[in-house]
Structure formats: C-alpha cells, structure tokens
Length: 506
Image (tube, rainbow, N blue to C red; front, side, top):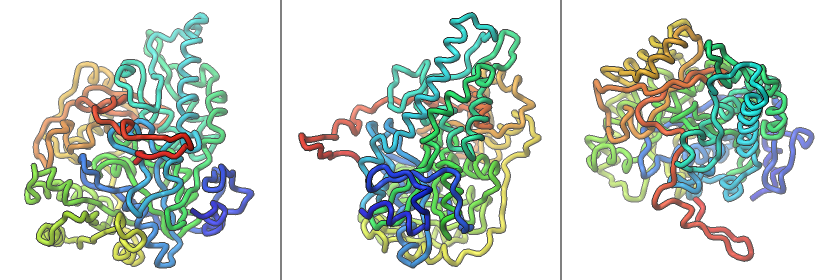
C-alpha cells in the first residue's frame, strides 16, 4: 500500500482538507470540492445469487483499468456492514486482484461511521422514550422509529432494524452537508398523537445532539486499490430496504476531483439502480453518463435451475430495465475459470441480438489488466440521450406504487394488507419519492421465483414514512429489516492469533 498522502496527491487534495487515520486511511473534508466535472459511471447487475455477481469487484477493476490507461479515475463505493461481514454475504472490498485496502480495517469498523450512525439513531430513540416518561407533553401515542444495531440478530426484529436499514443511514447518504444533515434529522417523524398529528425530531430539539455524533462521520473516507488508485468509501444503506448507494457527498467530491467516477448501486438493477436514478439522482441534479450491467454465467444458470438458456431471461429483463435510463449501456461478463467457450459464445450472441456488445472482464484474476476493453469503451462514450422517470411527483401514492410494480416490474396484480392500505390512505397525497423494499433475489417479492417472470402478484405488506430521508418505503412480501445469522456464517471461519494476525475475513 502507498501512504494515503500519495494517493491524495493523485487527485490533488491537499493536507488541509484531509484528516488522517494512520498511514492508509484519510477522511476528506465534506465541504471540499475540486475543479473538475467528471463523468459518472454506474455499475449494476442482474439479480443476486449465492454465487455473487461481482459489482464491487468490477467497479474496482474498472477504476484500475482506467488508471492504467492514464485516465484520471476514482471509485466511489459503499462501506461494509458488520451484519453481512460476520453473516453469509461477506464484506464489500472486492475480490482477487480487484480489492481495496486496508481490506481488514475497511471490513471491520473502518473509521467508525456506522457506529456513529447507530449511536445517533439510538440517542433519538432514547430522547423519545425520555420525553414520554417525563410527562409526554407532545402527546406521543404511536412511536414511528426503531433502535438499530449493525449486526444480524433475528431476536431483535420487533423493535430493532439493522443500522443499514435505518432512516438515519438513508439521511446520512442523502444529506448534502452538515446543515442539510441536521435539517433532515429534524424532519424525522418520530411519532404520532392520537389525532394522527406528526411529531418531529425537531419538536424534541433532538437534531443538534444527533448531528453532533455525526460531525466526523460525515467526512468521506479515502482509501486505495491494491494498485494505489484512489477510492472514496462512505455510507452504506441496503438496496433491498433503502436506496442502496454511497453518500451524495462522496459522489460529488469524486466528480470534482476526477474525469471518471465509478460507482455502484446495491443488488440488481431492479433494486439499487432504479432507486439510484429515482432518489439519489433526481434529488441532486446528477445523472450517470453510462451504465455497466454486470452478470456471471454461474448466476444466469442459477436463474434457470442450471440451464443457461432458461436463466438468461433474467439478463434480458435487466437489459430492458436499464435501456430505458441510458443510451450508453454496457453489458459485462464477470468471467470465471469454469465458463466454457460455448457458454460465452451463447451469451455473446444473445446480447448481440438485443443490440449490445458483451464485454468480458477478468479483473479478479488479472487486476488492472482485466477491464481494459471496458475501460476503452467508457472513454469513447458520447452524451447520454435518455432520461427516464418511473412516475410523476404529483401522482398520488397509490398511483406511484402501481406504476412501479406494474409498469416497471411487470406485476399483473398488486395486493395490499389492511394495515398497508390504511397507511397509504393517510399518505395518499404525499409528494415524496417511493422506495421499494423487497427481496433482491427475484424481480418479484418471492425469492424463489427466478428468471424473468410475467404477470405475477405482488403483495404490499407495510408502508414506512422516512420523512427525513425524503421517501416512503413500500415493503413487499416477507422482506426483513433485521436479518439473522446463517447456519454457516462467516464468523466461524475468522481467526486472530496472539500477534493480532487475522484470517478468514472476506
């Protein structure tokens, strides 16, 4: 690893705008902006499978390959959550020769950002509890927030969410500066009176105290790839529950210091990517110049019960999905050693018949050389000619939900629980965006329905108002906001010796 001061020099950020965490990590002043106007490249994928699709690995590899072509490029990624790190999914530092460093530190606690968010969220919950205990002057009858913890713990599901699913995490990643962060925290609806009057965090004078806990966390983290290329890592809302993107502050800093910014949206394009466009981009007047849709043959075969010719329909859905948003769409294959020539040729012909070129990427095994073809294509992009909105801001809430679930996902029917119907009726005139919260494993709300299903039924089970974040979450099926550990979780493989050497973290 290079000293982080050397990495910062590549993007011309001076010492006075950096806060050093040892030799290999620095925080960037959240108010800092350079003079460049970089192009934004979004990496997304087909629906995730147990094999992994490699969005983060591709993002890192593409960043390295662009830098090898002597282009000024940087990646802007999300921070790992301790829940998946110790659970089944693992960390979020890439893989093989396309990783970010110091990998162990990034996966474990990092600079404490998530702990700060957890503390601020739970402080707000404690303030609400104390207000009720001390006489409840505001008349809170129903509490609208939950405590959070950044671990998988199913026994806490009734009253806790995982930190990455909290409204405060979403706010943290959408706030444009410290002042906006405090404003958004003040706008959190913490509860309702018996007459359904909203009680805000600002009514409890809680916004300053909560923001204080986040004064260092709001500064994005600068790290590096294994080739010493710059990466900004900041924030991490789950894309199956929230909007699934790194912080807008990190993205805007990255755009101001480089010619190309590689970023990712969590899970498949039906989850993270559409919310990247609909929530993050729309709110902040930014828009990707290109989209890279990543897939693997293993994942496509999984979608077809082992048959590539059946599972490839999942790729078809995601190509059609992203083609609405951009005229610069690239279809990438994260190649495994087990992929056969016949499989690759079949995939290449399928993509060609849809009007696109399949680009093979080998960043896992070849590092900075593994995405050179894709990097070359990225440098040739012309101005994007498309912009797409799933619904109008003036649409009522029910119309927004139906437009997304029927027009975008292809549901033939939408059903609502009685509780969800009641909440929608109360919020029907809201001008807020909606954030679909469902399983990431399927286009539908059932993780067992794979491929490219048609005319299925989607069931809206609950609705949560995230007023501070500026959206309403629409929960579908059996989606969980507090995961549990798996039988064969990653913590079983982790070891630390007497000298502090660590193994088994991925």
